[in-house]
Length: 295
Image (cartoon, rainbow, N blue to C red; front, side, top):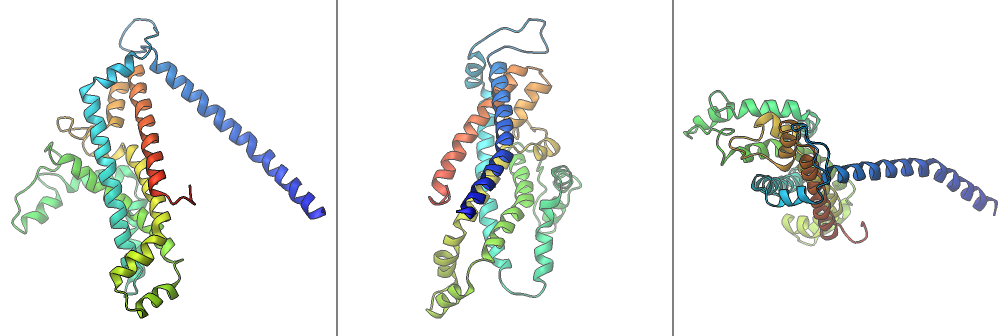
């Protein structure tokens, strides 16, 4: 009885600690959301002398008919799907490779994780030099096998995929790290029993290891999808949205509208729309990718 009472008091103390923090964060979130919606419903622009006017859903209608904005949304979706898919698949493959015993394993594991600890600015500058059409190392390596030089960041058909390569290089190690931590917890006896029963390595990976990695991979995919939607640094440093707007995502378009055109209300509408679409997509991904017991 006494123990139950102490547990009750301890739980009350915990509530007294976290409830004000949660309340403050919720209040701040609702206040910011309310201000963002207010901005979207007005016509605030720093380039005009007109006063603030209520325009209703005019900014949302403008976005729905803005061809540049729709193209930027399509590039954002394409980038998120490709980046998340490649990073999860490569991350699993590398983690399974590192789970084997071989000479120099610790060194290889440390080297693979290096890109993740680099800042996006350094990573973007590094890949910008590597992809340079005249003096970049990528074209030099390709020339040694007889491949003609490619204008990686100057060709509208290639530039988005060049940024994608940089993102995959930097963030695949994050998936590797999560997958490796889960692989360490898989009972070795289970894998050995499958081998003794005559199962091939492919069947062991497919039927034993991957089901146990499902929860980790779902979390990794969710986190990488969220980060890919928010990707800005690499795009800004490597291409600034060019050439010919071929790498302009919604984030970059919103930035241009806000800090080049100074159309604050429309920029906020773009950001709010992207937030809503992202949340809906992530809820669907969470529903279909995450095991029921985890949601």
